[in-house]
Amino acid sequence: MTRTIGLIGTGMIGTTLARLAIAAGIDVLLSNSRGPESLRGLVADLGPRATASTVADAAVTGDIVIAAIPMSAYRSLQGDLLKGKIVIDTMNYYPTGDDHIPILDEAKLTSSELVQQHIKGSTVVKALFNLDFHHLLTNARPHRHPERTTLPIAGDDEEAKSIVAGFMDEIGFDALDTGTLAASWRIEPDTPIYVWPYVPSMPDHLSGEDRKKWYCEHAGNPVTRETAQNLVDEAIRRLPAGGLPERLPPEHLDLVAQIFASRSLVQ
Image (cartoon, rainbow, N blue to C red; front, side):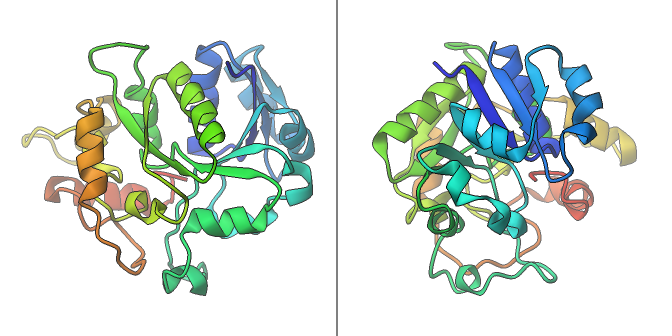
């Protein structure tokens, strides 16, 4: 059972994972590039299980370390601090503007393989990356709840994947092992299991801010293990295209485009 999470990155995904972990009785060391003082308000909001930390302390102290930073900042992860650690990679590659990474654009590696190469002494598990932060929070359910949903994970170490799956179970999700980091292209952006299966179908009569509010506040339908596996099996490898996932239902495109524009949806 996980007792302490070291969290590197306190954006929307990082903060949501902190909330879920704390609700499950897990202590969280929060860190970001701006330093502990910048986290004082967030720690006060999260309560006594949250501690403002340096990146170094979060990396060294956490039973599991979560990298919840933009993929463009993956080089900021310090391999010497993360040596021997299980690192959950929540990062997604969106090749836009100056954020292009040629080796990923050419599909020579998956994004998680690149992260693993960068922090060689750690064990990377790709997980908790394929929901927007709203539904990462609203879709979480207790163990054996009838509306429990399944999220994919990938990694090269079976024990590490088992530990990460245990953490996911604690915070409200079942885990589907989809294979190695080399095979994790099957669960990256613009694949069938990315984002859209987990979001709700919006009523036709809503518009504007009402649509956005409804989308953010309502849970999606639960994704069973069988459904998740079928979605993974349907994946076709494409070169990263950037922008929005092409497979989002049409009724979501305009709304999600607004959220993606600020990079707040999944980073």
